[in-house]
Image: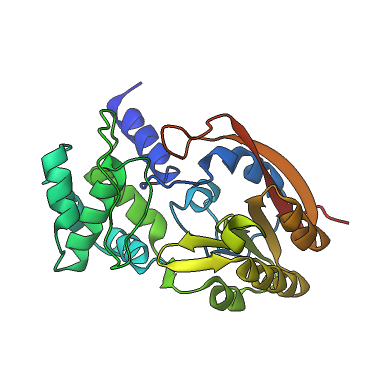
Amino acid sequence: MDAQTAIAQVKSKHAETPFLRWAGGKRWLVPEILKLVENVRLDGYHEPFLGGGSVFFALRPGGQVRLSDLNMDLITVYRRVRDNPSGVADRLARYENTSDCYYAARAAKPTTDDDLAARFVYLNHTSYNGIYRVNLKGEYNVPYGNRTNTRIPDRAWLEEVSKRLQGVELQGRSFEISLGDVKEGDLVFLDPPYTVAHNNNGFVKYNQHLFSFEDQKLLAKSIKEISERGANFILTNAAHKSIDELFSPLGRKITVARRNVIGGVNASRGRADEYVFTNIGAK
């Protein structure tokens, strides 16, 4: 293999790989999703719970692409990587994977969007389990991860991501507003917080917002509306009776299993079922 071929393969891999770690991300589910959409019309693509964007990067969708999330810092990261990957890379290269550097960066207050983006990416890759968590003051408070095998994105990787994000609309907004843009022939991938009816009375912290079971109901209503417009949807959610009852009327249900790697020292780390709901192939 010559050098140019090797570089091209690396770039291609980077173009299909999320540049952020994301707890609860769906990279493991990508093969199943690719099978689902193999023969599906893709006039446009929407992902309103963006996170690490695993599905977007794997699908390489055409048409108008709209990505959104309530986490405005996250959206700023995507925008700056899209618009100034070299500037973000230069700032990112100043960080070291040490405890002292990590906690200094965590305590810092970025003064520019490029500084914010580089700090976010650095903390994301060197933190514990790639969790995004803030305190009541909105301050990132995840501890240092002591990771020796970090893959912090370099300039070449961020430049490839930037190419993928050209022409992509990036918005910091709620899912119901984002789904208002969906049109006939579009594909929508949804990966909401996994709230079920009994979780702390149906609440899960989503960034600085509470995502409740009432939000799940609003999500079901929104999905029904986009289906009636002629759009296709793929929804991932918790394998729980209350979720089954809420979303099964909207399409077919597929049960998938994932390895459970999130949690503390005493957390269960076996395999856990999740549900995928979709109107693709539904009668």
